[in-house]
View 1 (cartoon, rainbow, N blue to C red):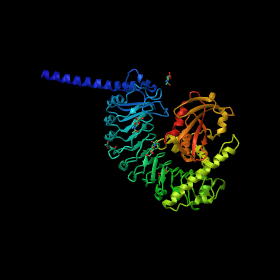
View 2 (cartoon, rainbow, N blue to C red):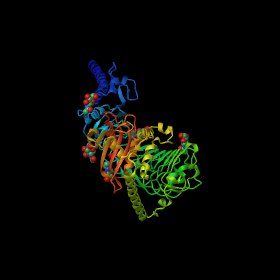
View 3 (cartoon, helix red, strand yellow):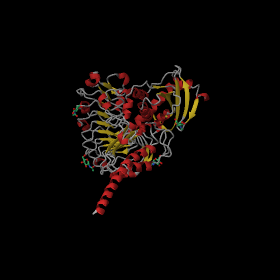
View 4 (tube, rainbow, N blue to C red):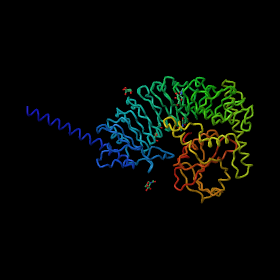
Length: 578
Ligand SMILES: *[C@@H]1O[C@H](CO)[C@@H](O)[C@H](O)[C@H]1NC(C)=O
Ligand SMILES: *[C@@H]1O[C@H](CO)[C@@H](O)[C@H](O)[C@H]1NC(C)=O
Ligand SMILES: *[C@@H]1O[C@H](CO)[C@@H](O)[C@H](O)[C@H]1NC(C)=O
Ligand SMILES: *[C@@H]1O[C@H](CO)[C@@H](O)[C@H](O)[C@H]1NC(C)=O
Ligand SMILES: *[C@@H]1O[C@H](CO)[C@@H](O)[C@H](O)[C@H]1NC(C)=O
């Protein structure tokens, strides 16, 4: 009996000991992670007297939540926000973690915190391919590894993390295909894979993720058609901007509040059913190849506030009885082929509504409209009609470039060239960054509006077009003393404008021929990516190949900031695609 009792006591002691060692090991594991992260400044709070991170006050950048001593939530937001122009999988001094960092060991340590439900590790410089073993965190509900240097495929075994509700991998270098595990993740509600290098098409299985409320795949190289999304009855936010998607616009699920599809190659008409998306507040279809007349219901949806249809091939006229919702604050119809009168609710300046309609064939404001025949180009609906349209467009661009070149040669040296329609549009796009009409409420809601849009809404000095002569003068004809250096992206010069502003000029020789439109898209993106921490882009200048509809060289003009290496980040964006 006594023997049995002592055995029991020993067993209990052992259990307690084991528990204590486990307890200490949780905080030891955290300290080990801290070491592997190369002691980020943010984790100095873990130096508390108890040495146990569970007892530190949560802040916006560091949170450790424990149940007992089991860590359930780990959030660390670092400050490694610089993105280099080129990242090829090797660590970058002072930008990513060092060469000594091994992602595999790091994730192994992390997965030993088996009770984790929330992991948020943002801007910490993590680099390497994300190991499949991350799936061992089987209780995980939220995984956010955005703004790091992770590349390769998104691990297929993430499909085993059946509890996962939020997966955010924005701003990394993932370069595989869009994952095809939507059928397994039945509780997935938020998926954000923006600003990576993902390829391939969106798998049809996305339709099985019926709990999704947010799907954000913007800023990748995703191609093909968008599969049917009708089954995603909870989807409120769809952001597929800036990809290579084509085909016709699919029918949209009716719960959508925000639909952002700009800068793709969508064709065909805007489906009438878009006019039944009663909850819609924000619709951006700009910079596609959409045709036909826009459904008039779009203007009168009960909560619509932002409607951007610019830079498509929309045609026809809008009925004079068209009504606008009182919530509608911003409408952009510019650079289409719409004819006739502007409906009353778009022409009067009601409710401070901002309406843009340049570059069509409207009867109003003829100075900024095309001749009527521009909008009557033969595209009778048939394929051949489209081809004719395309040829006409190309011929148009060639003519525009010829006119530009002639004017460039003839014009006064220091005058900015704002002559062609395309350039005007570019200019306009640059100035439009205040994105008026986007309700402040919507801007607050980081959940629905990506960073890029937010940055675009910040006030900034006007971007302008410089003439080549002006830049030659500023640099004494790109004299050797003005030469600052040469990076992988192009030569950098320092110069001084006539008004005394010191500038840095990056000269990009374009190996690929950019059409003016294409270039415009890139510059538009650049101008929108403004941020107080980034060097300011003052303007640009293009050197056109005289006989082609393409641009030979682009000069980006920045504020000169000694040691301003961030400018390389900006110019890299220009070359990210193609
Ligand atoms: C993905 O990127 C890494 C690092 O840049 C590279 O080594 C790898 O070949 C790329 N894979 C694909 C499929 O492009
Ligand atoms: C990295 O930062 C340290 C300290 O700020 C500095 O001494 C070092 O020169 C930097 N290295 C590079 C490659 O910029
Ligand atoms: C999905 O979520 C529901 C409700 O939150 C929960 O009851 C269920 O267990 C979850 N499924 C999985 C596989 O975690
Ligand atoms: C419109 O917005 C208001 C306030 O945000 C909301 O209460 C209302 O339900 C919305 N209406 C629709 C049809 O979504
Ligand atoms: C993007 O995808 C298209 C079509 O798949 C391809 O032609 C292009 O080279 C890709 N661009 C990049 C930057 O990978």
